[in-house]
Length: 272
Image (cartoon, rainbow, N blue to C red):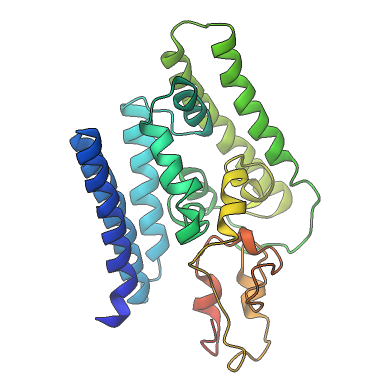
């Protein structure tokens, strides 16, 4: 059972969060919600250990579609960053604020940018595009993410400042329109730069939360230098241009790692 320790621990972690929120909030939804997400991630890890080719995609579809279709479209919850600002300004610890706290603010201390690799509904679509390996070209346009981050904050702040009515309807509309824009920009960038993950690297505002926290992540890809033969296979397949052969926290693009495990799967010496 030792090799299945990771999926078991992940399931127990999410189940602990699920039970704690259920009891503290008195709402059965949180028990069902986080139990489902934890079970989906645990299943993906189990499939990866069993060397299932599409293990990560299974998790992406299970979690991504659930959050996009059920939570977003059906339950009218804005799970984008605008929803986080909205609930934060109203002083309510619900929906998007809990989601961000668990997945994107404090969670990355444990599992880094695993959200980007396994649960993001935007990346879920982008990963089906043809440019799965990075072109390995450095582009100095990462500042765009800070612009989109600031714009999302300014948009919600303006709603409160001008006391706009029907804000919940506006937030739902913003969720639908925002997703259309994200997909359009993400797909356009992928084809323009020949890089499926260009949107994640340069535009996505959520990375402003994820990057600093993931620097201290307990879950990291590490390299056994005794086994490594410097073949460069890991660099070739990494979609985020991370130097996984360097075990230091300051390694090149270290906070970009989405734990997709492509480097681990392709390492001929099992050094990762």
